[in-house]
Image 1 (cartoon, one colour):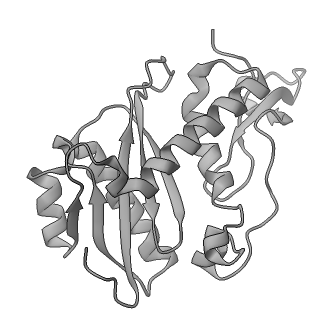
Image 2 (cartoon, helix red, strand yellow):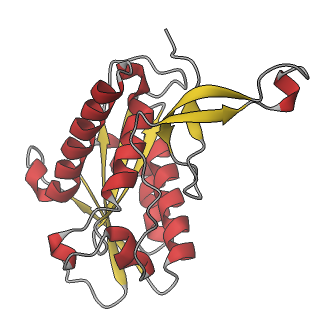
Length: 223
């Protein structure tokens, strides 16, 4: 592996699935990306395991890093040698953006160990969150995203006690963390109620909106 120069960033990506549990949105697995410089994890539920799906999440991740950390450049992409990471449009995308692919040897998952360990920890954390909230496993997609969100806001020894978010932005993250089963009131849109209907419904918190506000909730469990 080449040594990283100043302001160069390595992304490590891996796919987890199939989850074998039906989800309303049709997700069957997830891609997890670790931004190794900041030890930041980005988790994306996916409807299919394909090179196009992987490329889309990589583009999303790269776009976010360009916006949040304009002084850094994605230089390396580390993955296993699964078919969705080898050749085709993904290779062309990396070549166009001057990103060097690093593929682990067959059967040596430890060569991509950081993201592999992150996968395990996120799934286990999501499992515990669903159990604690008495939610069915069909909410795994919400749980894994929420787990990654929380992990990015936990101090890490390797970052001298900083959180990945602080390492990226330079300031500590806000304190808007909530438990996965946090009870909340969901506002009912006026289009879905009459003048005499309740303005809110009881809900359960299952995740964060992109801006960090706790707006993702459920008001009735899917059967």
